[in-house]
Image (cartoon, rainbow, N blue to C red; front, side, top):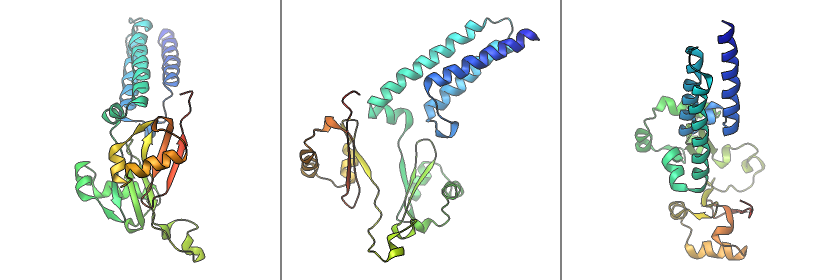
Length: 225
């Protein structure tokens, strides 16, 4: 009994230490790959507790292997858009200007009840109030309300309203995202003009977003990265 108690404490401390090394977030914020690794670690770590004859080191080796694997994959995902989308998928706009993208919803196997639950989680109860509803890769919902529905709106002070527009990342970590560039209808000439104005190249940009109102936001890339 005492041996099992001590082994349980040792395994618990070891798993907590391993999760801390990976820098994992709370379960609701995990990407699919991160959740799988966490479940596998929990299962493998339980083996030395269930089987007292198994040396703790035998259970520790596969856990450490998974920690190293996750660390390596995280580095690759950080640098490669292709691998990032392969591992985590990509966000999907399922509501545009108050209208549900029904075919996309069906493709993602999300019911209307699921959609309404996600919206209620964001304190939104009327789909017609939504300018954009985005299903994130971790299953959460991000909502941009229409201009007149936003808190402290221009409508409250009688100012002219500008159509709510979703900022689209066209450059991330020095990489041009061609699909997003086409979606924003931003021409290469306009993009080059923006970069020339800031005296930057694509490699120098950490993040450049463009919305459908033509507004841009640029963050320079940290040279130490």
